[in-house]
Amino acid sequence: MTSTLTLRELGRLRTAPGGLFDCRIDFRDGPGASRPVAHVERELPPDGIPAYLAARQSGARSFVLWADEHRQARVATVVTVSASGGRAQFQVLGPQGELLGVLTRDKAFSRGLRTRWTVSRAGAPDAVGYKGRLFWWCVWWLCTPLLPLILVAVLFGGGGGGGDFPRGPRRMKWRSGGKVPLEFRSSGNTVRLYAPDLDWRLGAALAALIPTFDGWIGNAWDARKD
Image (cartoon, rainbow, N blue to C red):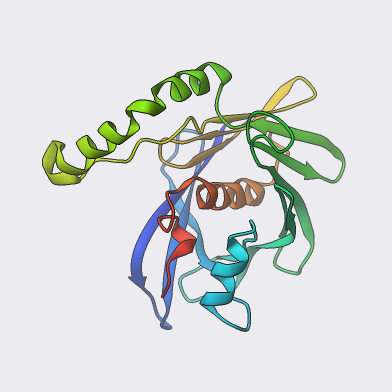
């Protein structure tokens, strides 16, 4: 049975007790209806938002997945282990600080042509996924000279600039031992879990983490300045 985790950006949703939530993770198990399972919030360093944004430029990220709107219990926490030289590595921790897995992002052209995401967990071989298919990347690169015209059309056409900006291929399939345990679909920022032994909290962490690297400058959910 396939499980689906979807990132929903909430904008400035205010909750009680006060504060802003950036995103929510919705979970669907098989054909059933989806339900919210985590509320996503940046975990800021002591120096606050400016320090977070400065560290973010090198690839660092830090956020909490709360079980409810009142921040009474953590589902998981994502912390940066290291971020340099085109590689960023993150630990996904459970409510008691236990290690659920490690997510590694290798930037395009640092260790290959495409961005590579690796999911590592105890007792299982690494699952490796590459951002986009080579065929669609070739199409994207061939079309890049037309991007300025496309951006103008998006801004001023189609209902007053309500369209989405064009982005490179983002879909990923992870492979491990000849199988596909999980997949990221750019439409709706969705992670699909195919392996029954894969902790859904790792999928939720990926659903929140991947879009922070794929948005336009200043447009990612964790990049707000307030």
